[in-house]
Image (cartoon, rainbow, N blue to C red; front, top):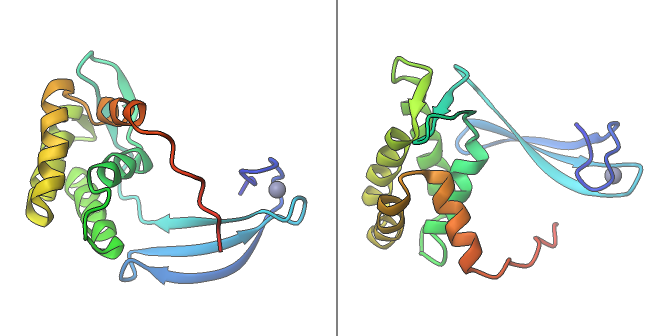
Length: 157
Ligand SMILES: [Zn+2]
């Protein structure tokens, strides 16, 4: 795994443990070249999904992107991070079991809204109000990140 700080390819795993109720493996990694530390998650990927955007463009499904949009909607809401992880895993499982690997971004947005509605009304309204104007999860993320100052980088452990 390439070091995100210096680009060195030869990084080491310092610690591996189950996460998200054994849905994922969390690995703490160390880069001997620059001393950087970072975390990776290993998850089952049943199928390779492709997102069909509203303009017809195709894009590989990116779980991290989905997760960022959802975390933005949940910002400062009293929801346990573990619960958010489980919700995101549930959304991905649903997408993977739709029967078609090509998924319209609209379908993803609707599933996200449905899931958010079940855990937090405020987050649901935030997501839905913007989503309805933009019709795409990724646009929502771009829109919100323009409105907010970038948060300080995670200082790490
Ligand atoms: Zn490095």
